[in-house]
Length: 503
Ligand code: HEC
Image (cartoon, protein in one colour):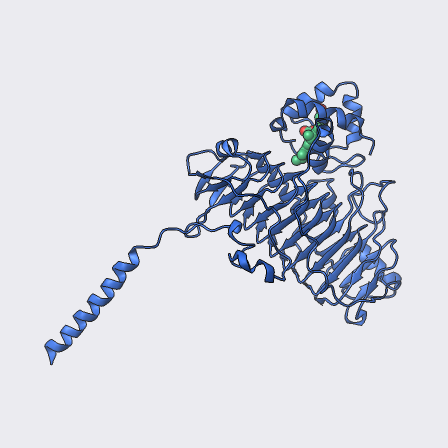
């Protein structure tokens, strides 16, 4: 009897030992990325594309080319130099410390994730930008980016972009910043610790911002001087301001409209404001869930907006906003804002003096979920009795109750690449690069263009020299990052353009 038991025990032990040994041999890493399917949330089956009803899809379609592999110790930029349009650059886990500038079309820059380890771009607290792209049909996925001073990922006039599944922390002024792009997706990114906007859609059209986790930044998700944008299914928490749709005056593109903000969690955005003094976002009161400034045709629907201490939703014109200059070419009022059903809880419990004064004027006390101040026409709200509100007595009841018919503003076909005629180089660089930090009339990150014009009026060469290797001049401004990567010709062209700019 005893031997039998021992025998069974041995057999069992041997069985598990065998299983264990077999487990030690793991299958080789299977590398998949979105080029094999449409998106992370939908798996990798290309054939299912037709049945997909969500807003996400590939927008950077191009004929696939070669794959170039980059491993720790090598430079990603070397691979970019070697790459041809259509190529995929696959970056293996490890530490990389460089600025990657992609000025070719149809490049996929894909990090490989192995056992949770990512290809990590580390700016060491001294480098400005991690990834800059000006090519069209650019895809960037799966990176970890930390410790830069300017941007983690910045687009400069590239169309059809996909920025997906990146983890970004403490990268300075902006996290993800497509500027002057059309038709693009920003999804499944985790972005935190950003001094201005974590996700900043600037002067762009037809964008989809979805499934991102955005926190510990001054502005969470910002749709600025852009049109046809959907912001959905994001988790936006512990920023100074959560989701923003607005017009910054003094930029060359003057409108923001058709913005849908739906199905997001916008929670506890009470972070003290640490924006650069004088910048637009430094005027955002801590505790602002959603901020609409001068933007038109904005729909806010089915969000959970809670625990934002100043207001759940704050709607303002330019005149009543702090740190905003007047632009005669921008219409300063938020028109046709539609506040559909939202769950709003515990907002406005420690609001600012200006809002308290507004409430007093309406003989109200309490904690406002919705605050509207200044001009604007034809806005509407449904179920207004559910919320504490101030300033929306002129809002009608909305004539529609949901945006189900609107799946996406992304385009069915990729838009043609932006072909830049040499004569337009200065203008495009001005719009795509400089306007991120310089407005014509007011202070953004850098001084106003008018000030610069006064300094350099007859001297474009001097201006070009400055931007190639900027030196610190103004104690109350951050340093300006070098623009040398643009090349001498473009730097001179942009200098001339900036000096001639009229608004
Ligand atoms: C990331 C933000 C940023 C970007 C992008 C940027 N600048 Fe600046 N710029 C600044 C800041 C900040 C200053 C102020 C620096 C200082 O005074 O120390 C500045 C200052 C300047 C000055 C003033 C120089 C002087 O002598 O006083 C010029 C000229 C200038 N920028 C031109 C440009 C041009 C042209 C571009 C686009 C190619 C550009 N900048 C892009 C942030 C930026």
